[in-house]
Image 1: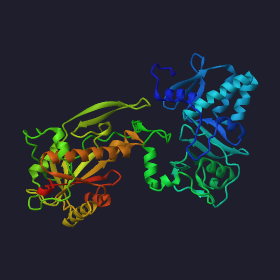
Image 2: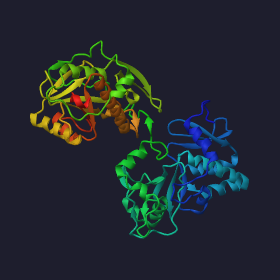
Image 3: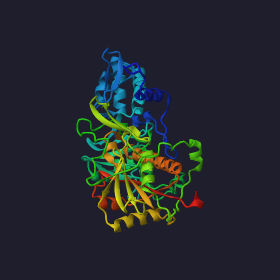
Image 4: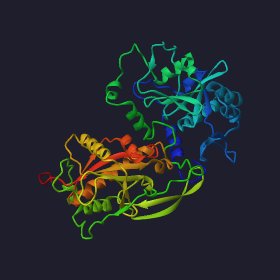
Length: 490
């Protein structure tokens, strides 16, 4: 167990690794760690920032991770000394085995290989590809089950990267990765892609599409997936990658956390009425039963500003605010502002801002507004009538040309509010929060005798042009049409 008394996720991973053999995705050959004994070009190395060595009491073989966690792997014997020292810089598995065997014999070498099997499944190892003293690439496992190997022959030039593979820049390195492959390759130079050793590693890991082979059994299931969807999906879940995932607060001490409340837009403030105190008495089950997605609205009776105020009061008004102290896994702390609102938000970030685009509303001029959730008011944003018409036409198209929108609630995200806290799942959390706000709009509108229609597409570039906002700082992630339904649609 780790030095602390509570078993953490990393320790559980180690315990699972002791009971589990390496297996690959369906359609890929299984590779055992022992097979690396025959691959001198593949080295095994501890990931940068991690150390492998003796515990303070010198009784245990422990792994210390870059974020300060400690995991006990096994009892320590002195015969491991030379191998543990070599694994810090990287060595072929056969060399590590031989170092232990020469010191403590075959049984100690077998025991050490078993500890390396557990270590590999924790994800804190990497595999340099080295030939004639030159490192061509680095294989970084993304799946716990991944063990690298080399294809028996160098693939022909016509074998290209498969359709879900991508090549991207990260710092000074190039990354080759795919949601279908159990590892990513790190290259110092793109020229290395043509190296026979690298092409053999790419082929073995599943990156190359064999131009002569028929589609494998996975292709039928993959036909419906687009590249960006599969990449996004696999990065939102554990088990398919080894990147940081979750609330890591990676920018504590570097970037100040964005405030919980957006700075007010300049301009005249229009106070909104609150929801009536005697409303909200209908049973929740009844509201759920009555909820419908309605795309046709009563043009003769546009929604009123009283109703718009009640809807926003019910669904998005800030109820309270406070400051909490957070601590990152690295031990740094910061103050983080949070608010309470009617809809839930991952990590209490509440990054979403509402911009009502009014086509027709009693007592409220046509135009674009920002909803100030703290003061429960609107501030009008300068926008031409042509821009309003473009937003309305875009929403109508997105509804299948059925809706004649009265008000469109454009939902924008202040991205840094979430990205400051989360890794890998930041944008996914924003979309989850948007879905929660959609449902809150639906239920609040139903209770108030109105109707909502969430739409799946919107023009973020148009929103950026109207508002003048940097779309990478604050941009739309959803839109919801609000209006009074025709009587026969209720």
